[in-house]
Image (cartoon, rainbow, N blue to C red; front, top):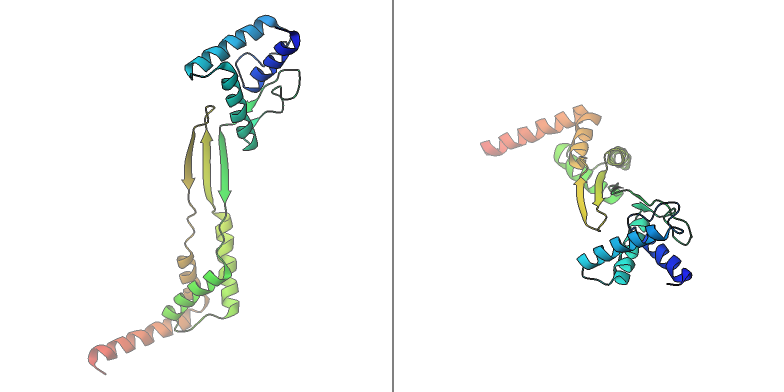
Length: 199
């Protein structure tokens, strides 16, 4: 095999992550290249592919992992003539902060206050509720962890946020003006008793 073709094959094997291709003398050690090729050929046969297709598919998979931030290929022989080590990080965590919109916060607080205080909230009360709710949503986000295998398989686990907007709204209504809340609850009780008595 011409030297240029041999070097090109060596680069492809390094880019595909074939074992034995990370040694500093890989590109000049013919024996190491032959050993790596035998390993690539064995792996290709196990997958029922020609070795060229196996290398091409492996390179593409590793590029996708690199793009996802799971594999650092900067030192793995990409575009260069020296070997290196591709650092594989099998776990990637994505944190999602979903903040309640002002419209939804207003609707939720209006429903809660109408039931508990007998009136609609003011804009200042909506501001207070939205600020407290969004702050807690940021402090306790939904965390999704993606765990990748070198063959491309992936498992996902999700730890959802424990923020309860309705509970936060209820606490605000009860605590911001306890006398107003208690007075309305007594009024509801009185009206309910009158209704039972037919009054």
